Image (cartoon, rainbow, N blue to C red; front, side, top):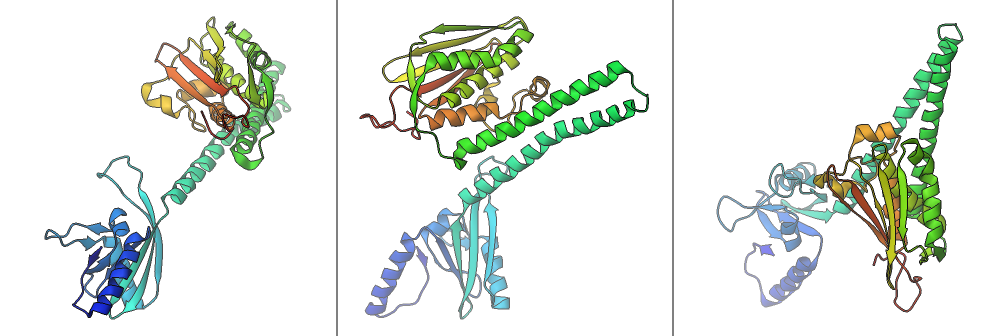
Length: 368
């Protein structure tokens, strides 16, 4: 702790020492400025938060400009001031996440002002995620809603005799597709919300992997046949996992649907099942366009698309892989991806084979 004071009696020194130790142990940053904005006291947490800067002379730190501004306002008005902001970390222009801090400045008398700083980085991160989520949802909903409005106007024009029967039918089919897309988006939003904890997970039950694979393949069969894509299933299908059969079928189905959507006509999507005494691995490999190295780590983010134009053409919502990730995590497993641009992608769903309450201590909320 940085401290500037005049000599005092031994008893006062002992009390001051106890106070310094208490301040040094706090996770809250504390800076006290005198009437000339010089640092009278500062604890290590304040320095770690970046509230102190190097001064003109070595060994003489100065307070952050924002801290000095708050202190000046408190001296002039005598009123406590509070503010929340993000303080940059790292070099200017770097992509390091800023530190969110909540600052509170109060007058101590004699021109002294104490500024407390609380780390609210996690709260700011959650707020940013929530804002981004709302913005993404709004954007995704606008597309089908706008299309439905335009198509409805075209249908209305048909009643005035400006469109023939074929054109009217074509617009009606477009309206149907956009309605299905909108319904799918809302359904997946509700599913993702439920998986993230809005509803309790069902009690784990034995799940036959052969049923999961058959159900997932069946859900993708129509889309695969439309593109003449063969879905090849191989490996061990006599395995058993624990959890929710419907959720596991949804997770694997999303992986297969994703592989079909990003594959060209006439290609093959392979589903391979293997396992041992501890885990089951289900690989879904395609011969599609692949994923760029700098995008591999982001494909499980909500609404993230590596090829936005192709995703929209395929009717994807950008939520399928996020749902897979949450289902895998909720079952004590995980999902990984390996890919090469132009060489296809392989998604691997890994699941534990034992129930969460067995002697090995596995938990549906703890990925192995």
